[in-house]
Image 1 (tube, helix red, strand yellow):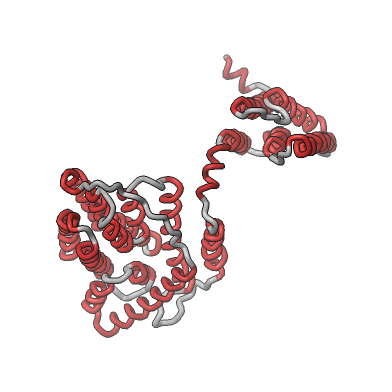
Image 2 (tube, rainbow, N blue to C red):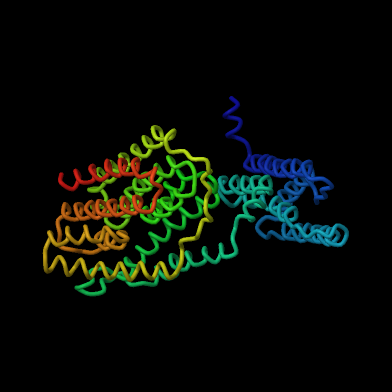
Length: 423
């Protein structure tokens, strides 16, 4: 019975109830914040915003299609808010405008409910409530931003949203079987992964130790992460965590490569799913075993301290990556033409001692006349070689106490990787 009555309610009555509920919720939130702040002086809180919402509803309904009364009401409200803002600056020497903007948003609830889907009104009210409540959070967040933080964001938007759409999607030539669009899309993909990893590390996990460094660093560059952690192990504590993080970073490398394969070559990505994810699981398991069973033997007195997180997104880095991508595309094309599939496998092993991302992305995006199995083996050989190089770096640069667990962890990963190559 009640449900039938509810269904039969007039749309005007439903919208009135929603306007009053939303307006009151906004006002109560402002009231709650007023209690927290000493000597707070707002334009109004619960009752004021309820009446603002109600005024907007009445004038919108009476205006009809002309919207005349509603616009005049908005103008009158704006004048009152302007007077309040002027007195606030003169009397209290404060210039905050949040309360005024919230009042104006409350006034617009009625036309929103009548002209747009209900979810949009709910979303806007939710955003208002969250933003008003989290004032201290936003203050704290702003302190974490460096001088060039927004410049970096602008760079990323430029390379992804401006440069990328302008590039041609036609292959450069027969010798370079990839288009400028795909070349730059690879740059955007790698830059995006590194940038997101950087943001997560800096703003969400700023002081979470070596383990988080291994996870997020591995998404960007497992080789660079291994070198940084190996050097840090000589003067930082919690060596078992550092050893575990180095191994875990390698596991994240497999996840990163798998994601890139799915983006740029779905067929190759699907074929690589089993080996790459299996190797990621093996790496994670090895890292957990190292942390669990080596803790007592590897701890030293000093605490692990995070170094300043550096933003990896630079135009020079992007350009170098694009040049390397183009170089490996040409080299791969030449090797396949001159030495066939065996030549590609040898090249994959040699490339593993460098940054393997440009080479792998050239494989994923280039239209080479090779079997899918050959491509999969080339990827696995490159990761195998890269792991051998990372192990060498850690053994040479790291603390003597992390050599044994790292050697054991990488040994398991390299053996599993080799089995997939020979499979």
